[in-house]
Image (tube, rainbow, N blue to C red; front, side):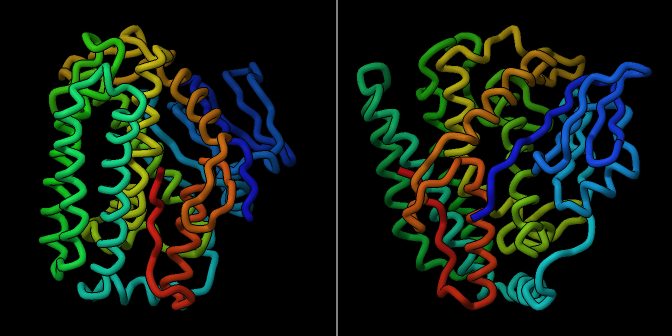
Length: 343
């Protein structure tokens, strides 16, 4: 089993990352802000203007340490990719499946089963824990609709039909998302999902969480030899990590949405952690991102019993385990891909 190592988040806008022996060094001008051994890291996420030295990027690629660059405001820019690892036959089979709609839909359907199941269970968890603080009948109605949707997925034969069903299920789920916000309702009022750009606090934190989760899914897929850019449900598009987005679908409700709700309901994230841009976009500010990543890193260390493997693993390993199960299915070692069904 893969060992969960540390993720280094670099938030200082004007710093530059360099390599010194087996250490990453973070510099701000002539000042050294930090020094970290590479062997303790599995990911480096940079929110800087100046970036990193080629030597450091090469060392990270060689050691399979994920390295992603974002603008200081959180927009994804690039990801360091080194030599391809894994059996080339695995990727060739992945490409063949991606080009065959009939085979693609068997994978995509299981992913969407996982997504809708997890959306429904998130609602059920709120009903179980906070029935007297929410409109229980409203949430129960949406839960039943999602349950009925699950039973219709098996009969789908076209990807467009599956995408349409997933879209309608997402609309139902987000119609009660605001009901699951128990505290700070005025500062985190939710009416609809909006993005590019997010226009309110709750959409800002959701978009940020999805961006981080997509990067972790991409790293997980690459670590088992799969191509994060060739998916089964999301269509091919230059620069789009389609397979990472496929995998992220089933993990959104539990690794991103529930995480965002916890930050808001526990008041760890507050209105002071956001800023509004001239174009109306709302983004996490520096302090907001620090709060987010501190909580994110702590959450990744918490244990969960994997529903398929029946083993306890940290939350942070869930994308890597799912990537491994997906690779095994593509190789033919397993009959069907088992989505992560949270409970």
